[in-house]
Length: 199
Image (cartoon, rainbow, N blue to C red):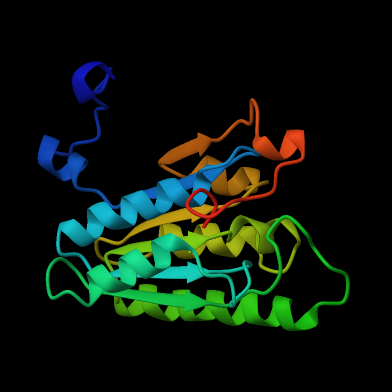
């Protein structure tokens, strides 16, 4: 894509403007760091455009405070840009699935039901479904249903989904798929996460 221009133009009957303004489904997956961070960057851009933003955290602990949450909440309440709503459904670290955590599974399912209600009502223009790949990977939420709901969502609603092990059918349906690949990480050398970097 030299200078932001597509290499080919499909024969789909759409004008350049119609094609450019289609709602997108983006997936950020892979073992590397930065999937959620990139999604929150998209949320910042949406806020700047005055779009309402809905963030749904599916697996990270409700007690976990990420810096992007505070920043987006403050921006959402500033009276400038779009409003920001932040919903937390999960508990526990995203890369650990704990046996018997029925509460986490039920919370994830209810979170998905809320996303479906919001999509149907066109509540937000940008949705960040953070760590949502995990409930699908673990079989808590049916990936085929997710794909169908997102394929038929009304209006002009962008959706970005993050998390390792994104299902193949989700990636196949997405307009944008980025796989973050880990080359090196401080944890490889025994260093724990630190303030200002991980949160």
